[in-house]
Length: 481
Image (cartoon, rainbow, N blue to C red; front, side, top):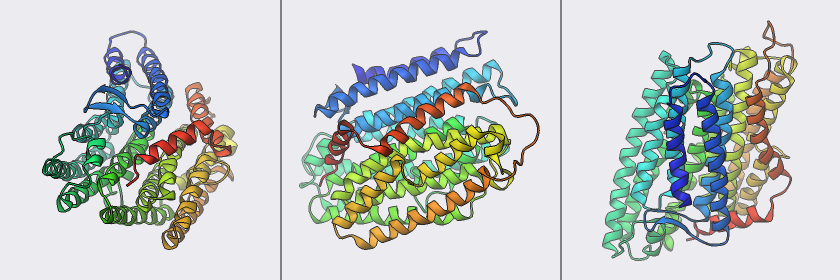
């Protein structure tokens, strides 16, 4: 029943958010309470899956293993912190929202969260495609929430490009279903496909994989299918950027790497090679684009693409690096919401996210400056933050398996991204303050969201508790091939 509650809670919260009330704070309070309950339920699912139990609500349709539970917990936590930050966003000092807009925002926020949580909860591969498609459909109205011409253009580009990707992924799903039936299997689930890996026709399996890689890769904004992502991030509200970043580097890579077990023997090497190619292309392309970026939200957008590429590269390498892939997936899902919350604080105190227009942020608001600097260092894998350990795990795993060329390229791209991001951010934080006028108060919801999001980023950078390491190894074991 717990899986049904996880899907029902945001639906109930969405309906309650639309309830006409004189209290503008009601939709936000309802959403924070609902997302907090989702975190508790997700952790309960994690606890059961960590003991090796498959949590099932409807056999063959809705269930969750260790890997799904990890993604579920990460998405729930991102939803919780984004809901807290959204309270301050809807109460912003400049152009505060009227009550009707606040209700619509939180109603759409909760509906979007339903689709995000459904991705790891769906066991049937066709239902996973529907859940991924819904993440696009239900986030469109949030991307264009500001109702500016730029926001509408970004939402239109987002809809067109990701819908084309969804069509390609759907064709891949249908071919994979055909391959499963040709192999004599009846269960179109992740576990059912893995069990039928040796008997499905290799030509059909490879064809399905390539179509799904390109289709889902478009939604994950892998290079060269990434054109929509920077535009969307530059226009979407900050809390929505935080949620979208988790979708792109957690839910979508989760779907792609779960395809690896369907390739037995030599065929798995072919699938892994494709993941390495697209992963390195995305990591390197994003690192180069970070050098010339001019907007802070676009900077974190390219950082998201870079990390998605790193996750897929590690998954493609397999072996010891496969564990690092799951580790990186977790740490980035924890880091990136904090980065966008820090960017929200920059917008509040500087009035813009244009990099050249912001200087001396640390003087104008020490808390906002410290948050931005910490977010930049955490996102680039600098010690002592969690991403440093996961990137080190990937490089170490690749070196152990003698994939030295891939390790060298990843190291080069990581260093390039670090230099580019720190160059831009240090210019914004230090120096003479560029903004003038009275300094606004730091909203308590901003501070709370930053604090909750930062805690695991810092704590997991010091050490990885054995229960979490056990969960990561269980999740990585589901990708073994």
